[in-house]
Image (tube, rainbow, N blue to C red):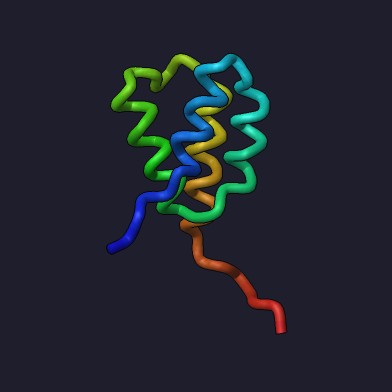
Length: 75
């Protein structure tokens, strides 16, 4: 049985606590696309989408970056 990642709930708690800069910094080093999608879903479920524009932009930007195919690989 696969457990859901707690990362998204921790980032949501940071944002709700008023530490949006810390939440944005954590989004920039997100572990995976799955975690970012969970965070996006948690934000929309809580009705917080649009409240922190910088957090919403960071989530969208990093979703695009992590979802894009890599142009090259390291040897």
